[in-house]
View 1 (cartoon, rainbow, N blue to C red):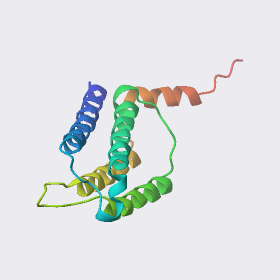
View 2 (tube, one colour):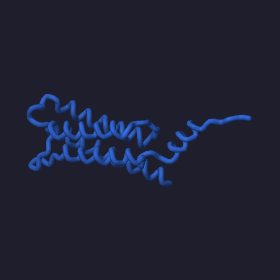
View 3 (cartoon, helix red, strand yellow):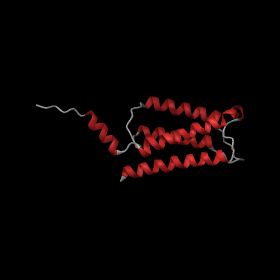
View 4 (tube, helix red, strand yellow):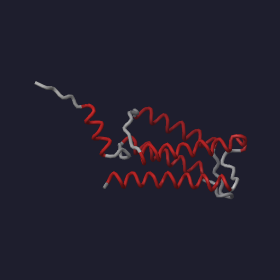
Length: 136
């Protein structure tokens, strides 16, 4: 039951972000700084693909993948810096995309370190794969 709740929460959060991005896209909202205006649609696509990746990887088909803590830290830090310089946070147009995705990646990095996103079934499959059977 706990695994189903984890998967539902991840799915709902992913679809909430995709819905927010779709709303901004159909409102023709600019989500990037003025220096990156020609890449506005590209950043919509990248952010939607990231949310779909999270939805599929942790919501629909959870698998175990090995990623070191240092790699996750560098990836999260790089994404925060990129989104701090590229994505827009504008109170007058109600665009908070940079802040939302910075918080999302910080939370995901912390949850990935503690393996809270990995379901018990996937953990059990990983343990079963590493077990050696010795016949006498």
